[in-house]
Length: 275
Image 1 (cartoon, rainbow, N blue to C red):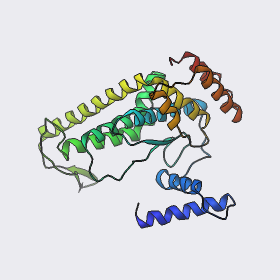
Image 2: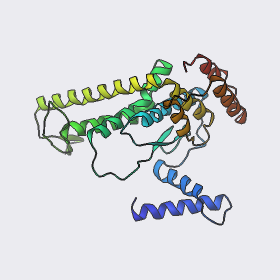
Image 3: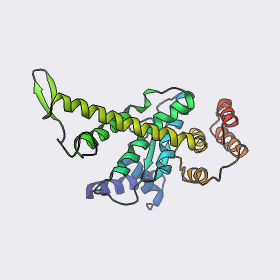
Image 4: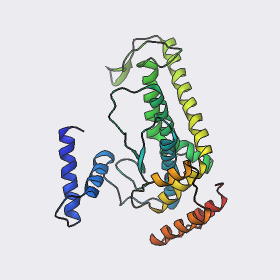
């Protein structure tokens, strides 16, 4: 963060402390302020159906599980399905250290994590939704940079053209480029190949860790009104310390009672899950 970002963070933390009636700023205030600065303002007035909340919970659960199991991905910190900023849900990752260069394994694992929400929806519900739009845009842009700017394609080789420029022609903005149509076709094919490859990695990983996906998504669905720290759940499932079906059922029942929700369907999903 820059100096201005830090100043904004402290100001936001002070506002949170005042709203809670405190005379001092505490760690929780800085945590809430960081979420506000990085993820945007929570839109608590936005009404979502229970079906939409469940889809978003599994979508974000897919991101969270893959962020944990991918060796080179940044650690997952928090999952929320409360609409935040322009997003309907957010999976927050916090890097362990500041990076200035990014190696290929890190970039590929980042693609896997971004594709995890779409794949989780596919595995759980048998279909996909429009919720992965921003993920796909980010993945495509990242994969295109791998091919066109960073020389990470064996077919294109050690060549780089930089970002495409914008040229105004008449009433439209056109993309300018300094390579042939044939090279453009190869670039598009390589971008697709990279995305398909990482999509399959995401699918395989989520199939292997389906129990972890359920364990993150179900409590996140219950805690839809606040951020959910899922590290302990992820760690338990990855290490094989899986809670019993009775434990999860009791947990979800308590959550639903707290929020005065009646969701027999989500409890049936626990019974049908293959833990």
